[in-house]
Length: 169
Image (cartoon, rainbow, N blue to C red):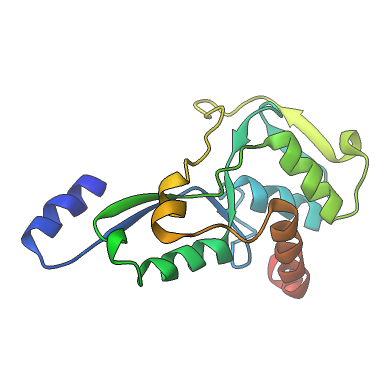
């Protein structure tokens, strides 16, 4: 899609900015979609007071970015002429293991016994061990830095889930 945009912009008078979104989470996700992303899947289990079924090892890692931070970066890019025709990785640049995500998720729901609440199964075929955004370009060009760390973002998401629980249960 990035190459298609590059070809198209040569023929049109537009100035695109391309963002590569990493693992976005936060209010507004469909909590019934159990294929949408680790954060929403894991919180969905906890919201239903069920043990989390994890597929694969706890050492796998991702870069989780809170939706409000993502929106801030996109809005900020509108006022930066140097952002035009650029490609940015939109993540936190922080490598978070599945184990760390689970621990933080359990803490938000006040569930301390990891072995009681986490059941580890076989990996999903083709699952990637991990990836993390290089955010140096977006930080330098846009001056953008995410404001939410994972525990803060999870607390915000839980607050929203508590307010919309009837939608999901």
